[in-house]
Image (cartoon, rainbow, N blue to C red; front, side):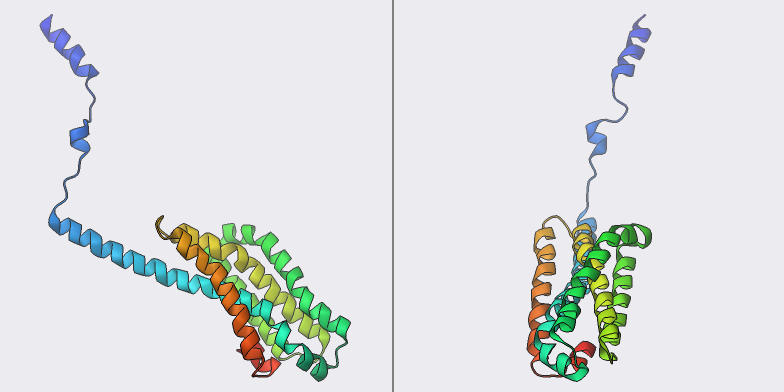
Length: 201
């Protein structure tokens, strides 16, 4: 009878107790852990730097049309309405890029989406550089708009996913900061060099 009571008491005890869950760390393990954390923080910062280059591209696309208006209109003989179309078609491309960016990111991943948007931006800038008429100019501008539409979704999501909790706010703020820096850079450089050189730059 006493054995049966002991067996019933044994059934009520948990298989794993809290004492068994505690992992004792040695000093050597702690040093390895801190070096791993330093290495992973460095990779997070490096990946964030690469990602916010997309935000910088966003800013340069938006800021491109302001310093180049007179030169583009003179070189290609555009009317004010044609140049206005060139300036505004960027936002139409960005709208399409933003609408499709979620599906693209789900299909080929965040890094794949950033690579794809970079291809659109490069193709668009080359089309602007080699343009001889308003059609190729608008197509290039539309392509860069599509690229930055994808960037506008993917970059902050990518940074938020890789950043540790204590750095997430600061690192995602870099996205907005680089957009503004890109706009300023395009405007300042555009006052010094020609519109074709600015497209290549």
